[in-house]
Image (cartoon, rainbow, N blue to C red; front, top):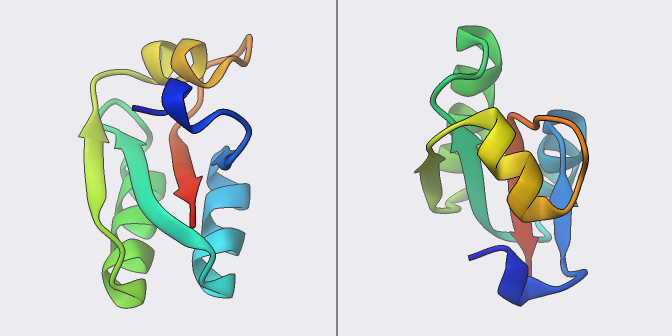
Length: 79
């Protein structure tokens, strides 16, 4: 998943939304336990950009997979 991508990823809601707007994301991961507003915002932005959106299990797990020490609601693989 994200580990294989190495450094070609963005981590965090703001970074993912910014990258979606710039058109540099190939796939988005968003956590089902994220705040409802954040979850909907990321999913909607991914749909508008035509980027596949994968539901991740938990913010804690996604943070660990991304190599950050804090839970994260969203992450994206860069093109």
